Length: 394
Image (cartoon, rainbow, N blue to C red; front, top):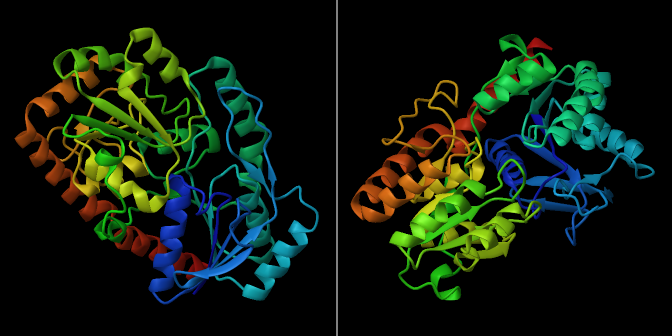
């Protein structure tokens, strides 16, 4: 098959959907398919390149202005740049895709490529990544309005088949986009297991002068949906028992409420904020940690699953039925706390720090669970079988 993978976010840009779309593109190519990845220009990345067995084309794009709001995102838009529509349709006509895999329901490149697929009769598979929700009432209302007035009508026009990653996504898509079992697939997040078998790129503890002190790593962009506040609220009690504990926060900080709260609680010195790091460095941060946690507001995303795979005890905040068809058992193959519950975070962290043997055992079971259910080859195989059925049905 000839498969097009589309995502405004793509490496070298970091982030869960960027890594997942690139990993799937690589796996499709490794399985013998011809793959074209289409994305937005980013930094100094070349406009075109061949990598990992497939071709990448980056379209000129306009960056979203940053207004200094707590909700600002590093978004780019390709649809507004002159000539992009014509260039995209010409590129796709030359490639002659059998199927198009869209990533991100509100990205303009997904809409552009989706419209092409709709006009040319090419099957569309759309993976839902970030959900347009917010803890703030005003932002939540704006997001719901955007979904109702813009995203849902466009998706109604494109009529893709949806890939939904977890229970929260299922509930969201049924509510916002009126999806059903008839037009949806429930595949988990794909985790690139081979990436965590490579040699480590650095010694995180030595670089940050942490030594043998307890270390919590919190990896992922800081946004309102992953605000780190439950961890900050738990830190006074954690430091009272383990005063040398450090927390390394890795990822861009788009929402800094956790730092302000850390100042108020007198625990700011325990936090080291590193910003975004290259994908190749991520395993080194997990390897250095005693505990990993950042999904504490309701979720268990790519970074948490990668941390589990790496063999580090990882705390998340979903229900045991979060992934349709995958059995999670708290305390056995996963560590779960209720969303936005500092007391539960405090209790779980202290239990893990106090009992290294228990910590190692749960970490080993978490790693096996991710490898069995979320490994890239397993998830990519499910996607390819879906493409084959969609092409046959066409």
